Image (cartoon, rainbow, N blue to C red; front, side):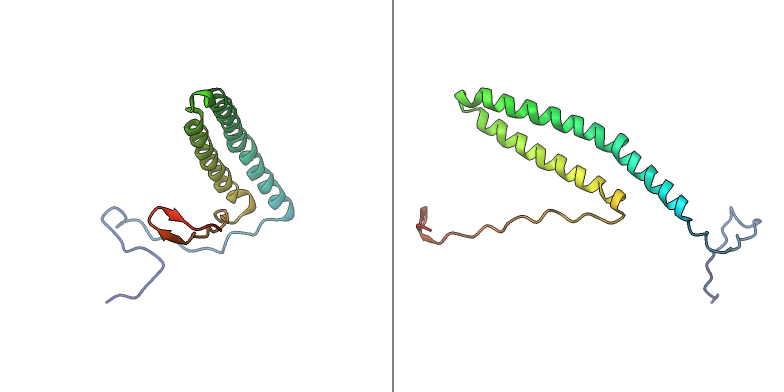
Length: 129
């Protein structure tokens, strides 16, 4: 039995290569380095993720709401509006997940209100609240 080390066991491909030495930990960032890093993260979120996602979200929501308003006469607008709201919820989740890198912590799911169950008198008959 060998002793445990931080290096992987040698394989056929690394047999002639000496293992890498573990050096000192990387230096901590200075205040200017932290500011520049945060600026890069914020810019990436805003320009590469947030702006295209916001344009797509706005386009889909306006199109869905206007289409459902126009189709309300034929009652097809209600399912279209329900689908639009489901798409809005999914896009909000995408925005929420992408924000985790900016604030340096995972974002929790939204707190949804609990729905109170209504007492049933008989199958298909509900009591007045």
